[in-house]
Length: 480
Image (cartoon, rainbow, N blue to C red; front, side, top):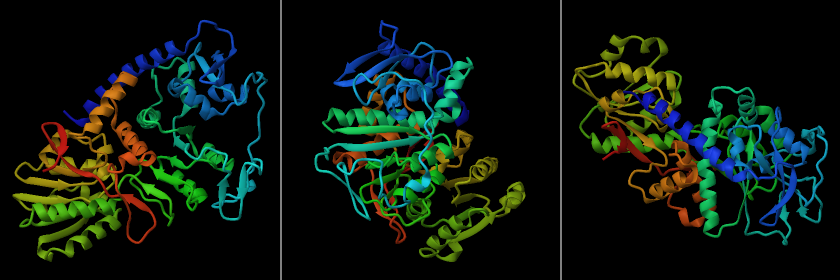
């Protein structure tokens, strides 16, 4: 039984349980009076809006001149799509703000702002003192407040469409990763606030390039000290071009294993760089397999990782103990060619590849070689490949890094209980990652969760703290 079977079952169960959770949240938010009216909650003004047919989140936000991200934060249920009859709490900037007709507001022109240096704002000079290099917040602003932004691809409009069209799917599939991350992150924020931290969280939906560019060009992140996301490296690099040299910000790449192209001072890569992973894997290989020949099996499209591994190993062992070779797409189809490169009885392999297609085709071929035993070392990205078969992973004795491992962790036990108590479901892999990242960056009490250091004379800071796992009895456990 493969990983994909378990994931289908878990996604189905989580979908059902999350629906129950959403309905429970909805029950809490429904107020007996169905008419739109003002209300005050914890001293903040809201309008209670009943969702009508064909309404969207964007349209509702424009209707009340409210920010879309504030609407999402105040009503987490909307991330999974609007339903007719929902009672939404619409946060208002001023008490008793009158409802008005929807008006299309043209976006700010991109040339209004200078890229890489924030020097101009649509704010009063009484609030901001500006010079040519940086922005200084005036002293009357509460400096103990942590201003945090999370940018994720929720695809809110598509979830709206799914709901309005009565589609069978409750959640748009591409929203799953963002939802998992958001649930874990929000749980960490709640935990930190219960410990006395004062956090202002803004959540942005960035489903495509145009929306993300609008967020940047309108300078919506001007006051954020911590920015988590976007999760895709191409968009994250655009974020770094805007704010990569602002010493008052920390930009956190939350899930990508690809590094940012640029020598930025305030960029943090939470998933260890592939080269950092390879350093640790090679040290582990040399320690555990001192008398074995180590074979580096690379992919022709990833020559940089192949060359890095070859160079690293050649520093420590004789050439006869290190046998590197690369495989092209055509050669991958030739089982006899692959078998000719391997030893008959026992093979210790290092496969420095992040290529899903290559890895998912290579492992089954190795697993089909009945008379040969294997020990395979791979990369953290393999944890995301949902088409790998658990039988192959166990038979090949696959070892690979895993970021944010939770084995025998008191923190994970606490997280698991809080997650279930809050959401009535069990978390997916990205939720705990988000939970740990929020704790580490937003509180000094959790600095042991990660360790950041510069790599290869670059200002980019990579996380060096991770575990090496292996597969036994259909479980991924810490390697000995």
